[in-house]
Length: 118
Image (cartoon, rainbow, N blue to C red; front, side, top):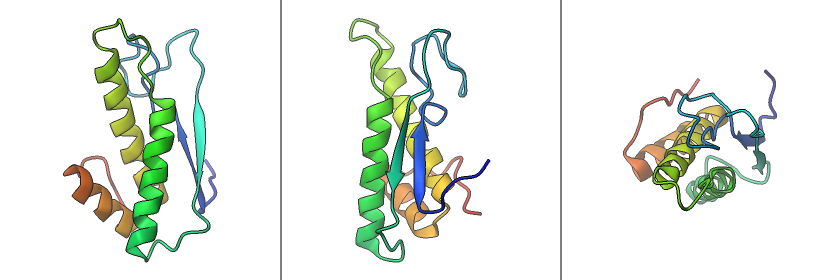
């Protein structure tokens, strides 16, 4: 799989939970579409702390756009959307492959699982 080093796609593959029925990490429920958002960061120098914060904010925003609660009436909908967003952000941080962004993510969330800087 090829991706632009200076742009990132936050997708429903990253943001998995489009339905309360989609419990598996990479399952999209029948009848639901894959939703993607591209996060550009060619304008950012990831060696700069403020630029890292800016990119993280962009990633959070994109994840929030693709990880929306399916139904306000579904009891698990908010929890699933929150998990989706958390996983989408972690995967996006991993894809960017920046030690500075990874460190910012860990400091922000206290979570280091599933993050590997290559």
